[in-house]
Image 1 (tube, helix red, strand yellow):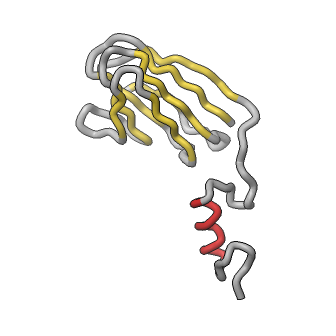
Image 2 (cartoon, rainbow, N blue to C red):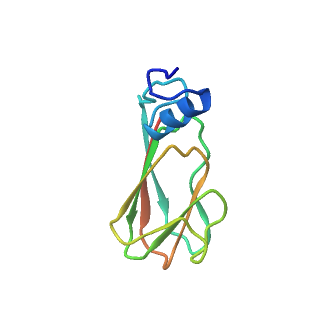
Length: 117
């Protein structure tokens, strides 16, 4: 017999909740606080955000004239990254609580970061 989600197993319910952006308990997982930081550009891997189990969302904006390479977890390089951000581009990261690192193609400017929890 199907439950309120139209699925039949606990695993299916959990996967449905994750897909819909809900917490494992079915709540919306909304944020009540935010923290705004800035990280100076670097030619070597720099930590943009430490792991945070309370993170709901992070917004990273490349405030530089150089490309910012971002990696979810681990050391980032210009050839090993999750996403590249051109100048003035932003990245919204949700449903990820691990560390986030960045490296720039040239050293100038900053990453402007808002983390909600």
